[in-house]
Length: 389
Image (cartoon, rainbow, N blue to C red; front, side):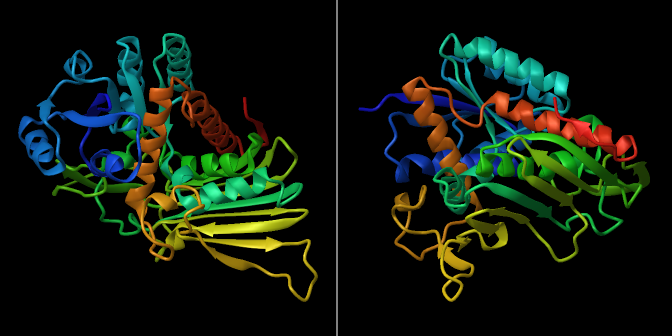
């Protein structure tokens, strides 16, 4: 009999549903050293939390996260709340001896992220593990891209181009949800989706950004207020309007520590683009390209081949020896967005059981937070070149 490890999750909106799917399915497809038990779900409203727990498969509920971390049946705390509460919950959970999985970006400020990384270091010395949930690292094609770079198949890296394009707030009458409020979200497209491409670029290349020069813009300055809105869906509109105090789009260039040039674009105003996370890496020996809207494909060019044979070729990343793919369906049967969270949970549980530090760590999350802060500082200072701490 494998040991059971209890999970307590805080938050049950968009990310909470995605994480719940992962906790429900992971043990059915991966041979894990422990079996996760969906012990308790926490939310502010007793009625909504109870309904979510029944729908998503959680055994019990709490309305106070402080009570959740006191429970003996909870050994892992999964944080799926807006960024303004990440630091308080994570630090308290780590101090209580609970392993922590925390949604991205790690925090709303560098100071909060530094405190979380320090708490994680101290907890790791006591055998308590933590990880930040950058799920796109767990797309099989992205993990394969990392493998190809690590094996030297691209040679010396020279260029990185990363984009994350969405369009869900193009309508100026879309309501003022929490993701459009700095006090809750920290920043707009920059932190919400820009954090993903920063982490993806650093993960795939194995190199960190050392400096940036950025621009940000808010296209719609005011939006209708919404009552009871959560996640991406607005509630009933009151007729009043409120100020949008985060960015709608962010552009920046940067340099990686190995010298490669990089460009990044994060926007929620790219009409027709739903979830286009894209990355292309060019090196002295080859190139690769990925677009999440075709998430089971990786395009690879081998520059060492003769010109008559050279060119980008499509790799369908569903073979048994591709990262993660062998646990699911026969070759050619594609995976989806929800599988990335199962992969994330699988890696986290294996690290917890083995007593090793999972990746990406809170220190990795802090590095991303420092890039976000450098972009904001650059944009506020006429796009001046800004070093990343």
